[in-house]
Image (tube, rainbow, N blue to C red):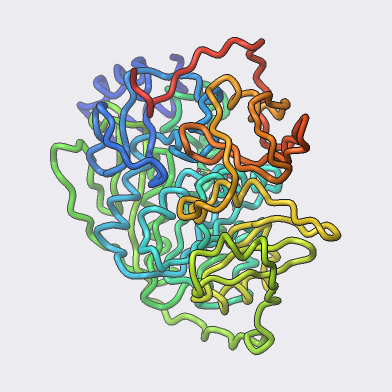
Amino acid sequence: MFLPLTFIEQTKSLLHEEWDAFADALQKPAPVSIRLNDKWNASLPYDHIAWCDSGYYLPKRIIFTLDPLFHAGAYYVQEASSQFLDYIIKHHIRHPVIALDLCAAPGGKSTLLLNALHPSSFLVSNEIIHSRANILSENIQKWGNSNVAVTNRQPKDFQRLPSLFDLLVIDVPCSGEGMFRKDPDAIQEWSPSNVAQCAIRQRDIVSDAWDALKEGGWLIYSTCTYNQEENEKNIRWIIEELGAERINITIDDTWGITVSDEGYRFFPHKARGEGLFITLLRKTATAPKASKNKMAHHGLLFAQHDYAKQFLPDQQWGIGKTGNFLFAFHKQYQEIITQIIQAYSPLFIGTLMGEIKGKDFIPHTALALSKLMLYTQKVQTIDLDVSEAVRFLQKENISQFNEKKEYQLITFRHIPLGWIKNLGSRSNNLYPSAWHIRMKTNGATIYESPLLIS
Ligand SMILES: C[S@@+](CC[C@H](N)C(=O)[O-])C[C@H]1O[C@@H](n2cnc3c(N)ncnc32)[C@H](O)[C@@H]1O
């Protein structure tokens, strides 16, 4: 691995006598790790990630794309160091919060937050780049939580609803030094001027979104880079210029995490994961007053729909309507959902249930993948074997179906994947075109899943 000279000098000045061990670690393969969703409650026979209850190191990399359980949102492939966020949330932010994950695509930290935050929390997961926001939407919908919205906004847009959030998670775009061994392109793109540009952009991102955070609210700032410009210096700037204090996180010495004055660093020669810097701050500055919700008295556009209603667990749930689309939401979030729809026109909010077309209601895959589905016994279901499940996800027609002419839920190992419309002698596959598996298997599937151990 050919490392830029300035990077070597800069990182040596951070690591001193540890440099050789660090340089050696960069030559070794990066660990492969996953994090389980609560759709799959099992303990796996792999090494646990010490700082995340649902995280595991896998013995080898597999072709996740061909595992139906991956598409079902049963787990997320996530680098181990990043899963430290789970530890921070569970030890410091235990009460319900309204949270904004500002730079969220492809969704690693957001899916983690959806499991780690108090269940009565609400998450706005945002991504500035439209194509990446679509991938984020897909991953969040596969994860299956309902207390979430995905938006495609610039950080400064969040000033529209001042002091709305109790928690900001800002995983800023960075120079990516911590990804060098996983992604050699990151080395080619690295330069001192890029580091300087990243540092400025990161300050802009945080200060643009700062008014959206309540006084006393939390900021979790992270990068996957080592240099001080993008980490310690930016944290000092946030503390001094924006008004915040750093919160101490108690860690176990055996984890190999390096504590610096301004945060926590993961170096691959000490901690089992890739490079990461993360810190927890609390806003001390006075925040602007939350704006009165002018829309609150209009409320949401509620819909009544007999077919859709059967998926609601109880009276606490309602059905909202945007255009011809219905979504399920917990009534507890009604006001915040109204505000978010008004201010940020989210890509989706709650659980997208389906589309009304004339007299027909076409259920959406997001409903099938939603955790609401784990509690319903009401729909006709077809459980596919692995090769049929892969064909279904490739948006091919499947041969395994029954006589009932209606929408049927497709599952694999009883975990939902999507819907077909059964026409009697054939079926229509309703899996979204944008989500389908493009990898060709020529009919032969060598099935490997980290969750099913033979
Ligand atoms: C490190 S990645 C986020 C990874 C994500 N948090 C996860 O865990 O999967 C940073 C994200 O910031 C987005 N981004 C780039 N420029 C930005 C800007 N000026 N403001 C906000 N976000 C930006 C990128 O598109 C990228 O998706």
